[in-house]
Length: 511
Image (cartoon, rainbow, N blue to C red; front, side):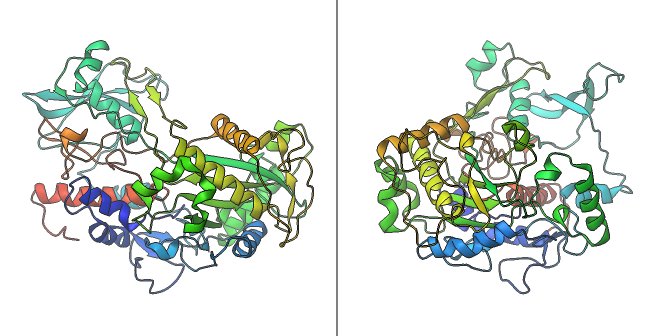
């Protein structure tokens, strides 16, 4: 997913959390430098000479095309637009094609490993050890000297099972993600003193922010039946060999077909208009005033309709013959909830104590409820629509006008919208509490903010209380971003490379 954050997201990092040179004006050049934007020439916020190609992919499915056509007719003052990723308010409340990290010429996914690691085989300064688990950072007088790691017994069962050590002459950088990085820090003795004492790890630095501030995007998926003549991803997802081989043939030939895309073709980043705020109820009122009202480039939810099933083989789960589905998908862009992740011992194989914090804030529940209603009104008007899959929708009370068992064909564009009662709203909330899921956008657990405010690293990515140790990954954002996290991860990597290079005295690294 090529999906960028809002400018104010990075500005918040700089201003609200005291991180100089992390604002949008500083981050945008990094985003531009890594990409070649193939969607539209001369778009001012995009880049055109980077290693990672960005395109619309090699396939545009019919259901997404209809979503982009019907959506603006249903959603008041929400037209179709060319760009959903300008990073500014003009990319909110518009329906738009969704670019992908895919080269339009070859159809190949544009991943960081291929373009930043696999092309360095002649670089004698780089050595990659795969299939390993880092236990801890080694310290001497609070200076990082290296790391201890194991050959992963689940990946390399015949390798040396004893602890291995690698030394660093200048710097250790942890880049293990929002779950891995805080775990390494805690196993190294950096974290809340009381917790480390309870799990038997000697304390190096009392740093209570480690593993706290966990954030994600709360996601929900509601499936609908779709006209059987429409091409969807269902057969691929269920492993149909004939369809798989045909799609592979198309992709190998010219990068087109289903495998030339990812099924996410159209979306809208929704922000309520003033006259819609009442629809979210009193649960959302304070969240709107405190967080959203004065930042017009922040949406409250991201929404789409896509020809991909919400699970691998939905037909099999329903006990039906091969059937095709359309999925209404949406995620809360800035959940108010916060979670945590902590180690339970110094054992690298021990599962983490992980609390997502999901659904603990009523404002998040209100956003999901609002999104379900808006998404469903569009879906039920698509010409390809053939009714909801009732088992995977809210279980509305008997006799409710919102019942999901009464429609098997699309309604007219001008048909009245469903009116939901308080009991219906309760059913929607219960559905989301039971079915809300991760969007795989974890961040924040080694937050870059002042130590006294629960921070773990400073604006130069240095871990507080020790020397020679940095964290550089999506665990460092102090607050969330309105986007899939890929572009933000790349920007953090580029910014980290500049910071580290300058500290090591490497010339020619200016952005």
